Figure (spheres, rainbow, N blue to C red):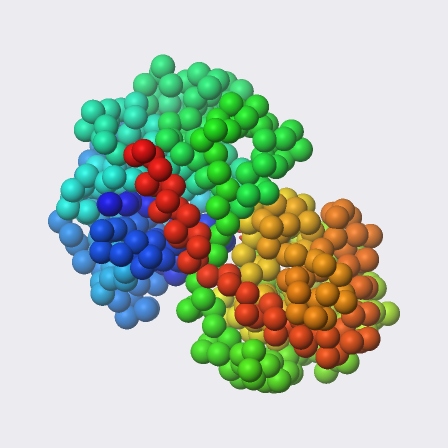
Length: 485
Ligand code: ADP
């Protein structure tokens, strides 16, 4: 089986969040679990920064000689596929088209519809030459690759008749909605511009394109798969999704357990494991020193996040004034909405002994926060899957999560007494309000102080949970297989 993933970001070459982490890990896990009969590759854009990152990593970009040419908005764009070498189990090909991709940043350009149209069309055009034969599965991720299934079915037609299309929704909140004149500029036929295909309130929706033209649609947790069929979480697409529900399943994300391994992590102060859990304390002390907080007897909370409304960080900001009374510390790393960045900077200046804030995207510091924190906050208003709670578990930090989406599927809260016996995986609260979060944080602080031995048992037990890609990689392979039966 030949599988091609098409995605706008892939770790470690281009990253804004969870999508890149998934694209960087799932294909390799599929290659591992699929055995000899399975061949997997990834196509993503060659952004200026990705080219620099490949060089910094000591890898090379090889011109494969595989080229493509696409007409967009009356201009012909030429590109080539570059291979990253030496390659991993799932080779990554970067589409080089400087006019479209050699820019600062990944998203937010006026011609994003055309840029990601080019990714989608270019990936199709190079697919057979990259894989040495037609792909059996074209697996497109999120709105930037939403036109992949649309091109495959409505433009390319017969050439791809034996290829099945799978589309994964990593976050329904981002839909890739553009003015309808883009439809013609992208070379997509007008008959697709209907309410059950590409049209969304008289505009083009790339996310709908991906859903409408795929043989199977997945999202990244079972609970989110059910939630998006409701008006509360459907982002105005719940009706359309209900009509597509037969093709929709939820498959939980995993994490890359080799890159996130506390017993072998170059970023952290002291390696630790369930058998050597006491060494986590060294990471805790090192983290507090690094961010200029005093040693604390109460718990250290960590947050690593995009600063966006989705993540519920305004609730965390409301809680900060309680930290002194709770005897807790909070270390926050994030970037995103400027008003939230400013609010946290200000709060850190008001509560310098209890709150440390680092604004920016810093992979290494993220590892040290997971390793050094006793608990990680995940108060998202909605969360398709969420990776932060799984990194937390792997590093023996109790996730404190709003019971929604993938957080509900992965953070199992049987109560403190059961947690102290090594059952469950974290602490959950039902309402995404400041009171809800504060209730959970208070409970965490009480549990931490009242029962240190029970806390240790809980932390060691969550480190041993399987958060790898194994079972989900198999679930995707089984889904691909089912498309032929
Ligand atoms: P999303 O994809 O919605 O941003 P996820 O939890 O699914 O959220 O995955 C994003 C991951 O990226 C987080 O788990 C976190 O570890 C990492 N991350 C987010 N923001 C930062 C940051 N500022 N610095 C380092 N890592 C970050």
